[in-house]
Amino acid sequence: LAKTTQPISMDSYEGQEVNITCSHNNIATNDYITWYQQFPSQGPRFIIQGYKTKVTNEVASLFIPADRKSSTLSLPRVSLSDTAVYYCLVGDTDSWGKLQFGAGTQVVVTP
Amino acid sequence: NAGVTQTPKFRVLKTGQSMTLLCAQDMNHEYMYWYRQDPGMGLRLIHYSVGEGTTAKGEVPDGYNVSRLKKQNFLLGLESAAPSQTSVYFCASSSTDSSIKTQYFGPGTRLLVL
Image (cartoon, rainbow over the protein chains, first blue to last red):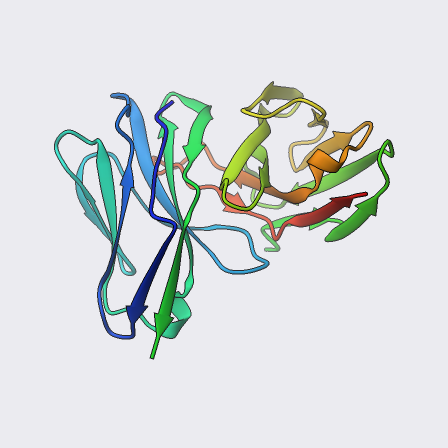
């Protein structure tokens, strides 16, 4: 399964857009990409998932280029409550046991 | 709905002791997972189950055993705990009904092995 690499940390101010890029150079044709958010002392929570191109929901957007070797989670107009660790996950569509989480990106939002 | 619950929340073990972590979900999900989370390493899959009575190994299965006797429960066992198993353990479940592969996580169990 594709090894995933993401930045260790990112800082932002309230109201700015935060973009976190995850690299997955060896992603396979059947692999999908998911992003999770985790607050301290809690389990991760699903944010968004995509396979190719762009996906948008009420909280985030996910950009996936044509070669799918990376993906970018975009958080528009962040607030203090968006301070959390964000994980990229690459998983095999045909096998629920084949998945690889990234090490996580700590995002800190300040006033 | 309680979602995914884990018991206990925190446990301290001595090297060589055994224990069982319990995960329960009330969403009628087919798939269940056990992960461990260590600093700087994200979440690593220990074992998973695709249905009642079935289990499979994940990325880091050594030193752990699992059982899925009931659809709603997934147990993780440590037969002889080692300090290297000090970690936070997360259970998750997912449904086969949706085209989106979403995992729902429990709150975690913090385990310290001395």
